[in-house]
Image (tube, rainbow, N blue to C red):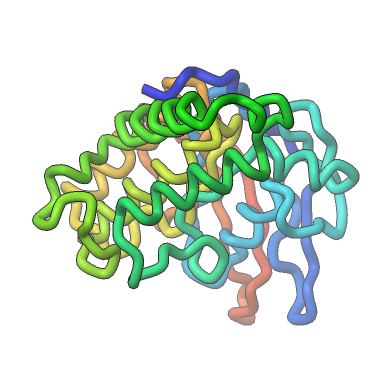
Length: 247
């Protein structure tokens, strides 16, 4: 399991975002303690992904406010991006189908060391830096329940050959290399069988139990998650009004 970071508490009050086509979401209230599993449940087009990105500092809200780990949105968007990480979000954090699993892992560890590490860490001997990167990768893979060695071509398996659940596990592992306080996952249950959907939620619940707050978009929230429900308005536009409660 990844070293247990203290998850970020996430709160929101009258949180909303209006775009060119109208409200993406509006009236969101949320109170999730650290290490929570939060599910954003609703149909496609109901503002789910916009809400996910707004809560992680990637989209600027129009009204209301939220706090992530004590950092107030929208004023501290950059700081919130620094303590959160994106798993799979189509069009934002897609895996490169041409790269292998090992190439993705090496690239993410390198980026983490170069852009998120401390200047002092960069001065450590190369062997120490490599060993630390390996420890981060191994811990993240263990937390995501993903073993590249078990793939048909091992770590050299191209991402395009992965099954949907395998891709989800790899994306989560890549996000966890940075030891975020908040993990965001889009389309959690898309194109998954019932058994695979259960495995996906088991994975995300384990990450949350390990100390990292998890926010996941889905069509159907699992039992026990803190749930935000979005819905399209009667005209079919992407206006969403969300209410929060425990399933």
